[in-house]
Amino acid sequence: MADAEKPLLIKRYASRRLYNTETSDYVTLEDIARFIRDGREVQIVDLKSGDDLTRQYLLQIIAEHESRGESVLPVDVLTDLVRSYTSSAQSVVPQFLAASFDMLRQGQSQMMENMGRMPIASMPGFEALQKQQQAFLQTMMGGWPKAGTGPEREAPAASEDREELEKIKKQLSELQSKLSKL
Image (cartoon, rainbow, N blue to C red; front, side):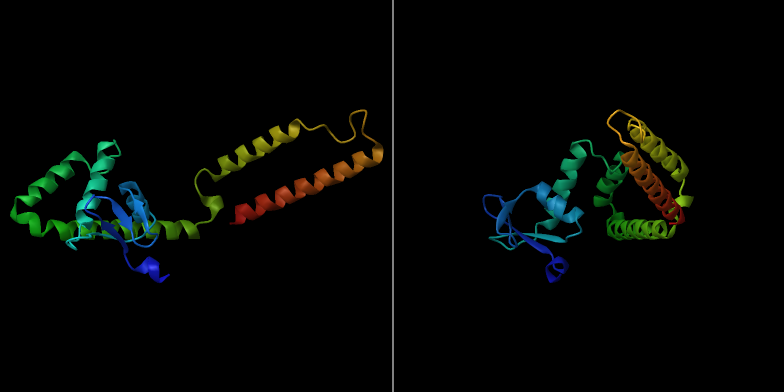
């Protein structure tokens, strides 16, 4: 647990290769992006000088995603960011961006928390999902031979099959009822 709290230290060698100090192996920018998506803080330092290169590599990850068409930042936002480097607004922009992302994170957390409290049956589309599930089960069970039909069936076995089918239907009904209550 302590490892997850401290930043994952990545060292950049003179050859520009990135070395994960926890797992003792080389990593790529995509690996670093995955660590961050998984909620891990990352710190990238130059092995020789000790300079913190984290910001430089994070910007490179963002630039690669943007260049692949995974656009998150609209052009007008990027333009405003460039302008902020050449204006007196430079001192306000970092605080504004940090506050904006904090609000976004809090909003997402609140939404997920509210979703956890919301009964599933009251969620939009739940009834349609239930109908699709029932139609699917009917389709699947429609291909099964009815109990007591077919030359290989004997009367006692057919009766047992019917009872088993009734038990399954009852269990399915109970499960659907429980799901509706959730």
